[in-house]
Length: 137
Image 1: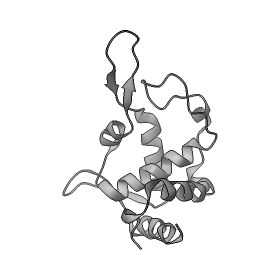
Image 2: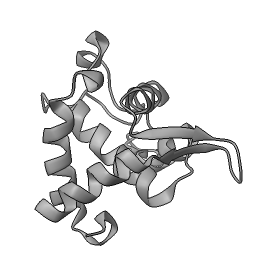
Image 3: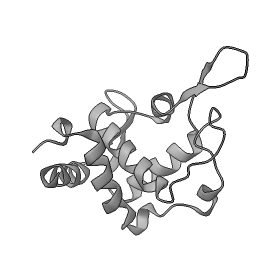
């Protein structure tokens, strides 16, 4: 079963649980104090937000790869409420996305490529991991 055809919310929830158990994807110390972007007023409330974001990024790399930090910042960005002024789109935090990409790369789920396009793509191990979870969903 292909992970592309499954309900994203269910797949990300199951994947987040599995990724939370992996030692390579442990959230850094600073993750308790950061916001996920400049448009946000506060940091995430959920204690497992790091693994949920990692699962979402892994799925996004699977769907759109090759993809880089800049494109993912655009995907996870949001509009900022600026009082009486019009809302304006701001990109998400690059440090959070970059660190998660590095962790997924260390876990062997994704890898860097230069051709035909520069970015990160999913490895066969990562594809097998996601497709196996898609069967369980």
